[in-house]
Length: 251
Length: 251
DNA sequence: ATAAATTGTTTTGTGTACAGTTTATCCATA
DNA sequence: TATGGATAAACTGTACACAAAACAATTTAT
Image 1: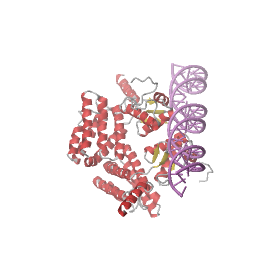
Image 2 (image 1 turned 120 degrees about the vertical axis):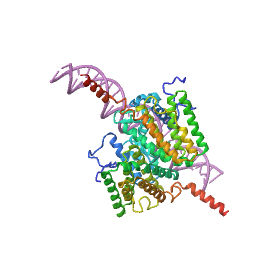
Image 3 (image 1 turned 45 degrees about the horizontal axis):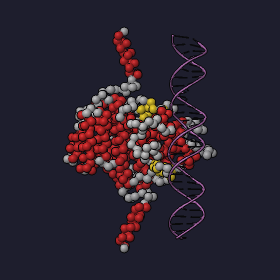
């Protein structure tokens, strides 16, 4: 908070000046990742390599690596000779992401129930508690973050890394979808019902938990995606159409 | 086949000498990807940047990008200051991959049945036909490849790109698992039963197809993973354990 | 006045150099 | 002969430089 460096402070490292090797890349990645997923960078925002390199105090080489990774995760879009921008999921992509989440999160529930322990359930309840706190103090960003975190942590109970990693990617893409299409209150509204599924899981009711999850994800998708039809940023065409329409009507 | 270049021929490009921009990277990626997935490069094989750069006639910069991508896909392993090697999935990882496949491939079946058309079914039947041909002429490599291709193409019928991409990754990792743990005949034996599921799908029997898929994937996993317990290469620990055990017993 | 062309600036793509680390080799010593 | 350590070789990580492409702005032509 008080450092007078020219470059961005890369979070909690005790070693003060300059960290080693891939830790730095990782820190830069996390920063950019958080900035995108937490919607500090609007979808479509350009991400010039020079700017980022200077901001983080490294060369373009490291920045490129990070951008490649984010592109692989579909959080940024890299076009040839045109650089990187924060990704703007299409409606199709948004629907695919939520359909994928239904398949994965409902499919993994059986294992989640099977591997649930008091410890893990307590940790999950804690996430829900913090979610409620964030909501009641009006911290929408934190509430959205914790909402996603809950789903990821729930999947993590299954101890299947392939699934957990995939879902992590889907959840972060969901955040982008919310940023692109979401109504102002979307993503965490209806005072998160996450408690309910924990009850079902604790009771060993896999079928019930699966049905709950399916309904929950459909609800979330409905409040997020189906409200708008095209990305707000790339609306030029639609806006022009609207103008043209009004023009015709008023002629 | 007849070029006297010093670098590897990067497949079918009409432009003869040197291709442009990211097309070259893509070609290098495909070459390495195929080499790994088709088991031309044994798991654990070192992949030095200089060697690859020289082999493909580009600088290390391009090679690095390709290796990073393969690392994201878990096909190669990159360790700090230690370079890249062909990945050696652990047993845990292998089980996770197959469990993930069961979740995804069974979960997507409903959409596959819903979106199946005569065209798509014909294309799938063609894959199965080529699979049979490869088997009957003893081309095990091609048979394994087409076996994986069938699963991916089946998922593609759902038209969900997130799911299809994820499954593509899981299938290529399965190939690595087969290369690491598989019995000599594993991966495509029992004269692929893939025809059966096409019948069920064509008949619109989603439940039947899902059950078939679950059983099929369990069968494949059993013939591939459960035969061995540890990677043949990194067996040191287990060998030592065995030695220690024998030592205790004979003491 | 509009469109096309040209020039200049910015940004990306790719190769190369150098520093730092790991790995291999060799020799001394027990 | 085996062990330990020093030296050398090989390789990776990062920065930097130059070339090529895209973009913006100005001039020129129609």
